Amino acid sequence: MSSSLKSCYEFGPFRVNAPERLLLREGRPIPLAPKVFDTLLALLENPGRLLPKDELISRLWPDTFVEEATLARNISDLRKALGESAGEARYIETVPKTGYRFIALITQSGGQETTFIVQRHTRSRVVVEEQAGESSTIRSIAVLPFRTLAAGDADDYLGLGVADALITRLSKIRRLSVRPTSAIVRYSGLKPDPVAVGSELDVESVLEGNIQRANDRIRVTVQLVNVDDGASLWAEKFDERFTDIFGVEDSISEQVAAALMLRLTVEERRLLNKRYTSSPTAYRLYLKGRYFWLKRTEEGMKKGIQYFNEAIEEDPAYAAAYDGLSDSYTLLAIRGIMPPKEGFLKAKAAARRALEIDDTLGEAHASLAHVRLHDWEWSGLEDVFKRAIEMNPTHAIAYHWYAEYLGAMKRFDEAITMVKRALQLEPLSPIISLTLAGAYNQARRHDEAIEELQKGLELDPNHSSLRNELAETYVQKGMYDEAIDEMQKAVALSGRSTERLAGLGHCYAAAGKKAAALEILDELSRLSKERYVSPYCVAMVYASLDEKDKAFAYLEQAYEERNPNLIELNTEPAFDRLRRDRRYGELVRRIGLVP
Image (cartoon, rainbow, N blue to C red):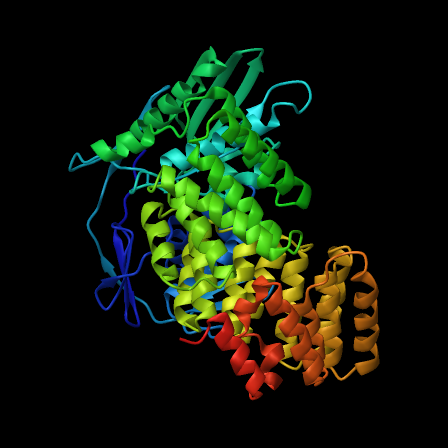
């Protein structure tokens, strides 16, 4: 295959060098994901012409089904790279429901021709050579959950577990961008087209495989696919005893790196083959724990704790299992399923034990930082977040949690930047879209928050937290009817959770519908006799009703139980009416949010 790329384009302060795939602003490079650059090139090659969405999708993802939401995110990322704010169209015009048009004046110049020659080697790798003779390296990958070929679902944990293990290993290669497990878990139990998935996740390669287990034997079939043309870069089959699963993962990791033309350092090779346990039994239990934890349900987290503890019984020095315990306890406490004091105490102990065993485990540094954040343990906390990211730069959730810290410190621009880094690693995550919208709202950039929430809802229209955040954003803009409508949807989608009911009460109160807000408060009072009701959320309703004494009473109750939401005191708009009260400043200081 060969291609000739001859043009460079200039517009405004920007220059696009097509042969070298570079976007420059006043001579400084601006990083773009591959598909985002392809989107820009398509627009530049058709200046002034309306490009229909289906034409753009066909060009960018030929022979692949991709939803319009993926194209919309590409356009959004491109606008941000070009410095366009929400509603602005200096370079790219959006024609609603139709397509996009490049509207700026372009100067075109000739560039150097570059010819590429591609050779394919079955069961090995694709070698791409330029005229200069240099090899082309693929630098991004997604590892799909392996499909389990067995009757029933007894081995379902294996498919996701092995993928998670390979993601952890490959993340040790600094030059390789690896999509996190949370980005690929949605494909578990499915048979997705690897090229389509690669396009959705904006990666250059996808690793897929099958697992079949019979008694103590295991067969693993694996293939590495080039997203650009669907070609197989490497494929292999392994027939081993389950006790040799570690060797299989070692071999897959090393051969994937070779197929991607990555030259590993001695340290990278050591980390690639690093094993956190030598016990196959402990490893199997750990995989089951991660499988259930990734469901993010109350039942899943509790089962995860059970399996992580069993893994630790088999191998008391299993650092990764302690890290799994920490994440489980933290999430149970944040969601109000476990008393915060108890949950945070156990979570910190587990994370610290993991780091005593292995201080290089970046995930454990992130877990410790996360629980310390919600337990108001501020001293040296930022350094722990930075250490976590340094140890594992592809751990998307570490950027996500760090952004929560930055938001609590009112460092809004930094928080937004950090969430965007997480979104680059996990581009189809409604949760990260939610966090980015929350960061925009903290900065009082409500229009950008709405734009991001709408993107998230295109990915998952039934996400109650996205609906909740959208409703709260509408409240800040004085769009009370829209806020109430969205919050009613959130309540229904959550199964009338107490947190969402409190949110609806807040919307009613902000809209001046006092009777409706009081009805919600009565319902929450009745429910509190059966299940947990967050005093922090109740305080929001009373604050919006301008009943300050009752709001402070519930905030004090939240303080006594160490409610994790109190880290938002510096930024929660619902409490704006309380900020001038002396009691509010004292509470902020007691939590430690004031230096």
